[in-house]
Each structure stands twice: as structure tokens, then as C-alpha cells.
Length: 108
Image (cartoon, rainbow, N blue to C red; front, side):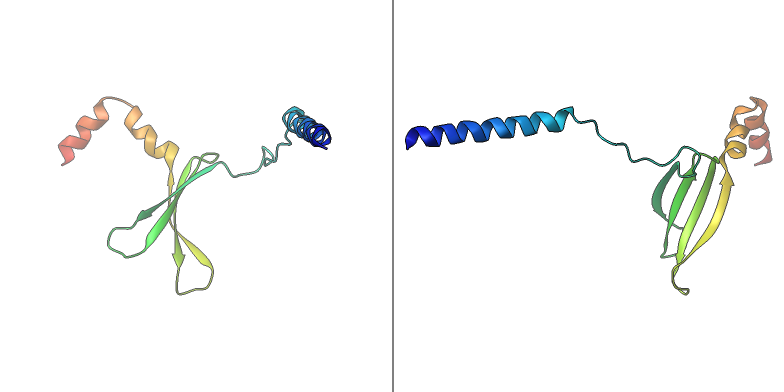
């Protein structure tokens, strides 16, 4: 009886080992979006000065835009766009010339 139990345990371990190795050898299927679709975004939440509401800030890396979105509590299931910024235009100002910061200082 004891010999039969040991053989059963060895057989069970062998089957489990084969199943474990089989899981590592099987390639995983990738589930990703097609490349042409928009969806390359970063999102974060943050406070809005002067209000009790928070906004969701979305950086669209494909279109290089920053969006500020807020959930409108007065309307059911509606998200409003508070603002949109073109990051290429906004960030290009600092990289143009060294004279630009001096001109800004004189205006103040």
C-alpha cells in the first residue's frame, strides 16, 4: 500500500511538472491596440484653484496636446473640456533664443 502511494505521488508530481513547463513554453498572445488608433495618453488628477472640484489632466502624446477635463455634476454623464493647450507651441517658446527671457524680464 505504501509503495502504491509513493508511485501515485511521483506520477502526480510528474504531471504537475509537465504542466508547469508547458505554461512557460507557450507564447503569450499580445492584446494591444492597433498602432493607428489614438490612445497614447497620460492622465493625472489635480485640483483647480478657486473651486472644490478636481480636474483630470490628459496629455495626448500623439497630438501633443494638454487637455483639462472636469465632470459636470449638473448634467448627467457629461465631461467638459476646461482648456486645451498645444504643447509644441508652448514649449517652443523657451527654446527659441536667449533674448526671449530678457525681453520678458523688461516687461515686468
